[in-house]
Length: 283
Image (cartoon, rainbow, N blue to C red; front, side, top):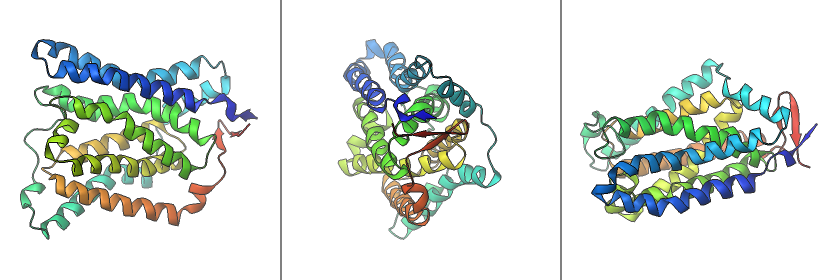
């Protein structure tokens, strides 16, 4: 029987978020200096890698064989049931299409159904503006968040509390990007604080659904990497207006509440999780 003391959520999130927030001002500064543009991408990738590096360090320096073997199992757990695979692939695109249809009743453009001409989250970064949100971010982030972070909270709290805490921390982790010139988050600031608030709320709401999916797929990291990628792709692919993205957040909020109500036992059950067939319980 392994105790939850094998996990150290306070240290994981404190280190991960502190380093990201500390390097944020440097990244923001170089993004406004043309002569420093070559430094911007390495700094961005560094911040992206921090949670994953911290997670791997904490896992492999723990010397806990069960924790380490469980990580490898989840990392290569590619078997996903057809039901959950369909949800992963089509859930977010359907929500975006539904929100776009609703936006038409508010006089918004039908052009939102067309594919965007500039697919990416960083102006002037060509392929990197696409690769980062669709490949690198989901892959690298989830090594940290689902590789260690979420389970470290889940070993101490039920899934509802875990999702609340993680949603808040995940939103905070994105904060530096709002000051990086040319980045999608920075563009939201110029459009209005209502859209900045919408982004943070959407991240908080998505935390409930992505954690629900994570535990429903037997804590498969590949499943969540794919889900994360589809979330980002759905936000980038079409010419979705920011007004419509607020509707998307509203729909996601309703769905999250429905999940919590309809699957309340799953969200409010004991904090114990299964690790290699063994319960990880509070110490």
